[in-house]
Amino acid sequence: MPTNREVYFNLLKSNNKYLTRLVIKSLLNDANGFWDEISLYKSFDLPCNNYDDLLKKIERVKKGEPFQYVLGYANFIDQYFEVNPHVLIPRQETEELVISAKLLIEKAFSTSGNLSIADICTGSGCIAVTLKKYFPFATIYGTDIDDECLKVARRNAKSSEITFLRGNLLDPLIQKGIKVDVVISNPPYIQNHEEIDEQVWKYEPHLALLAKPSTFFYEEIIKKSDAVLNENGLLLFEIGEDMEKPLAEIVDKYYPNAKVIFSKDMHNKMRFLYIIKRGGKNYA
Image (cartoon, rainbow, N blue to C red; front, side):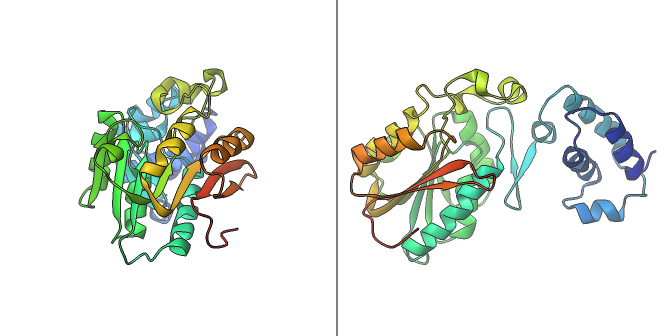
């Protein structure tokens, strides 16, 4: 049985574009039952556990299948979430959205009171579940049109008291007369599938990627949001990097008096849109 060190460096030498250092370490952690790199490094010169099963997973990754689908889970802000081809794999940009949302929510509301949040296009539920962790006393909703997504989200929520509703965007909330303080969403926004990475297009759900025009789902959410948002509500979005101008026009159309903030991600790309419904505090 080879050691973890031997497996690691042999895989690096294979020069397969999908077997990056991060992916190899993730596969080795999974094979050995570890959840952090320190545990792996401490066992680097010990025999690799579950080696035969690891080899099968390596072959799948070599062919291009995302390693998160191969493992059946993905990391998101220090938590692990079940993922499968029915849901998008959580991205770093979405982590940034949730961390920023936490700060904005703390600024705007008393987090020990009757805070309510709706995650639209919830997918794996990673946004809703993480916000529930940050705000345990909040009422959290997640909506998605795909029942298979909601099955994954409910499993990820585990014992968390999150209400998942099936339906298109805000419609399930409107139908039930639900009002919330915060609407947060990472909706589909890619207009042409040629813009999508080959691996993503082949394996991840197209329903969660494509929109025509790219602003379609944003406008659908924004134009109906007044029926859902409380008076001083927040609308928080992840966006495509070239969408600032058309989205600014949409916001001005429905919320001419709102405070609007566009924000860049850690790669200096315009990636987030925050709308404070009635202006209010200085969020800049």
